[in-house]
Image (cartoon, rainbow, N blue to C red):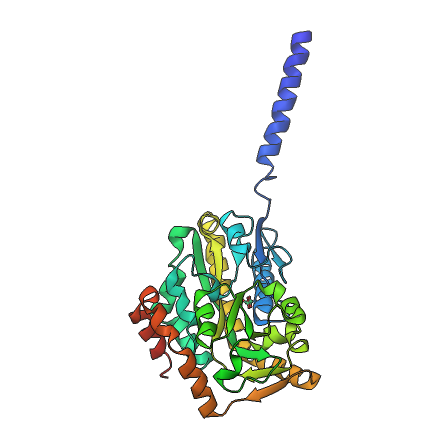
Length: 334
Ligand code: LMR
């Protein structure tokens, strides 16, 4: 009797266990993609992340879940890359200024006055040379899925920056990029590498006196409230690479990876079509707010800035590669 009872209980537990394994309880767990970034939702990157979430969850209901963390709410820019490599987040879109530790070639995008306008940037990103950079960090565990552009950057300060010598001695917040550091040293200014999330306070308290940002970041971070003057210099680019942890990405079921790649293409086109307009709308909002004077340079003044910053190119030509610089310059010709 006792043996029979024991046998029965073994059978019951085995069946229960079998039911758990075969009930799809594990297969039904959604694939979670944590997408972390440092800017506001109301920016080209913020909107791109939300559109990716919407499209991915619509195409794979219950199977893919995208959690978007904006405004450095999960990781600031000092820590996010490390988090991606540890698979604590799966997707990021860091500025191209933040990759020099992983591939020196990407420093290309920080060269001052490289691209004439955002259309030239797009032509380069779609070229073979541009696409090859997406693959350039695979051996480090990082796969690039596409480029999302913000816009060209503008200088700002509490004094008028009209000619390069106006920047002398001022402390400028820069992203963690040696090219940008060199760019301000070239002006005899003092660059300070600082996380994006610390910039507002840095400017407010005078730790730094100036910055370089596209209008969308100026407006959404309220930088215009702590900078009296914005010089429309369009001297450099702020653009992003959407990246994933390579192991995570390659381990996805084929149909999911293919579907998400297609969605990423659509989202990238949408972000890149709208980003310049987005920035122009924020420029208008800044003008309406009346916080800062926007200084428009004459062609001669802009040429002076170009000449003052241009020696930086030579310093980084070896690390970036003359061929790549030439390919990027060629994209200025329509
Ligand atoms: C910055 O640090 O200025 C930018 O990279 C922030 C961003 O992601 O737009």
